[in-house]
Image (cartoon, rainbow, N blue to C red; front, side, top):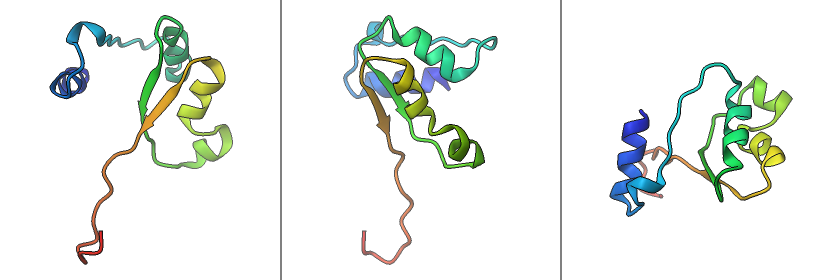
Length: 87
């Protein structure tokens, strides 16, 4: 999955050397993202579907933004079309 994300960024013109990926299982994901973000200029995250957890704790991007002083960009996934042609 990380390789696919890296390749997608490279295909869109991002320098492969500028993409850092890492997997850590010992830290909560939000904490790990915020901790590693300190070494970077910005954080780019994919959007998440709302759930009970997000209603209680907030969206993951908001949680990262509370811990990171730089910009947090949320990328929306393509919306499915309903097939009626009124996109």
